[in-house]
Each structure stands twice: as C-alpha cells, then as structure tokens.
Length: 345
Image (cartoon, rainbow, N blue to C red; front, side, top):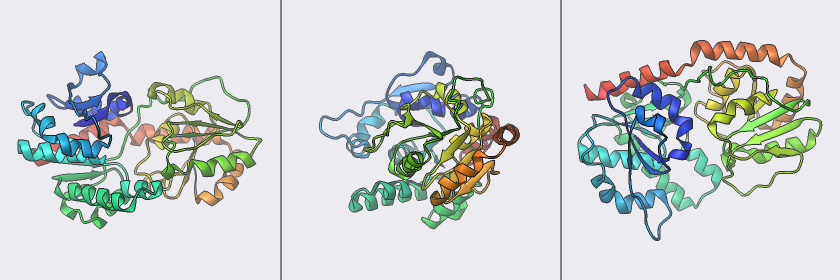
C-alpha cells in the first residue's frame, strides 16, 4: 500500500490494522514522515525518495520519477497491492502492479470528480485528472466502493460491472470513540470536523453561525482554502486523531454540509460518541440509519433550531448502539481480506 505522509496515518491505522492482523506481511511505501515504533509491529515500512528540485505536484513527480521509485521497491515480495483511491496512489499502484506482475485493488472512498469540480480547478487539468483516475479504476483488478452510491458512480464512469464489488463499509472503534465527560461550553454546541476545503461547504456553515448567535459553533480541520473565521466561531485548527473523541464530546450536534462524500467516518465517529448528526443530502449514504437529520443545505439553519428542541441525548445513545452492532473494523478487515484473496487465488 502507498501512503504520502505518515503524519496522517493515525486516521487510517484502525482499518489498516484490521487487515494486517489477518495477513503475514503488510507493506507500506511512504514519502514523508516517520513511522512510530508501535506501527512497526504491524507493518513493514519503506520510505521512497520522490524529491524533485522544481516540481511540487505529486502526480507529475511520480511520472518523472516512477522508474527510480520502483527501483527502491523491486525487491519487496508481495502478492497484491491494495490502495486508497487518491490519484497518485492509484498511479503508483498501477505502475508497480505492471512491473511486478501482481494484481492491484482500489478501495474507492469518495468522488474525487466532485471534489475537483467544487475546487474549480483549471478545466484542462480537471479533464486530464478525471481521465487518469477513470483509466486506473478500469485497469484495476477490483474496485471496492465504500457505499452503494460510489458503486453506481464507478459503473457510470465506465468501470466494468464485474470488477465492482459489493460495498465494504468503514468501521469505528467504539472503545476510543465513546461518550466522555469533557470541559465544554454550557451553550448548545454545534461542531464540524473535517478538511476546510471547497467541497465541504464550510462558508455556508459560517453564515449560519453568524445568524444563530445564541448557539456555540466549533470547527476542527486543516485549511485547504482561503478562509477566515469570525470571532464568534471557535476554530481549533487541525487536531491530532487522538483528540477527536474529546472534540466530538464537546458538541450536542455534529454537522456535515459537504457537497460530496463516500461513507463518512465523521458520522460513525459522532454516533459512537453518542452525538446525532445533521448532514446534507449529498453527504449522507443511503445505507446508514439517520440519528438526527438529513436535509438540503438551505434547510440547515431551520434544522439546527428544530434539533435543538429534541432529546438529543437519547437519540445519541441509540446511535451508539447502532454502530456498535453494525460497523466494526473487524468486519471491514475480514471483508477486505476475502476480496484481496479472490484476485490472488
């Protein structure tokens, strides 16, 4: 598996651990950061050199340096390559797959086309990236979507139906994400957690927050767009994954206004912490049971007011029981292993 920066690896650790516990060796090729000692008991790490004096783009750097990259990994003995759906990771995996003569499998976690569209990138660049992504998905041995909607999207992009598996859903560690007594505001509190990027529609949330000045709003996430937060918003920046359970527990309601999502971990984590969720129609997968509300972004202000009057604590307890029963990382890991074995046997 390829990974860019190990500083973000803790978010992926639960799902990758659920796989590594069921295989003899799990290799991680990475570019930046350094592995923690505890991780080395679960994975074999291989740092690859993708430095280039003039080029910043990950995908361009890969094309320029792919032979050099492969030379650093050619002696690693593997049976199958498993990759997340980020474009450079797919390019990396497809190239190594062809050189080593082993299958590669993509876990499709989101609609990157909608992300690019929301970011309003250069149209020529957008078209080129969409083409590369579609080509990689078509050439993969299997595409594992993490929602029914993404399965339909992949088929619409031209991926052979027989290569698209049934969805494999994310899980949540309910021992880590759980109700906690934490220091928090006495006011009704609404929280957003995620990247601050165009497809997440955080500016809409800020306008709502300015009008609902009797409600406390807190936001966590790294900035990937030019945005400023009014003094009435409690913006805490990008938090370490280990601090997210505390963050959720500071809120009464979690909101997800995104224009696109796959199967959002934020929803499962919020549910596990006993917190209902208000999500946009585009962000909430059909498979999930609603504990809170799913609404058009234009209805968020009204929905926040309505939800504030409900017994959210009881709703949150029901949400936690639901994910405890249905969304475990062990189920995820077992499903992924069975699919990976199917392309090797």
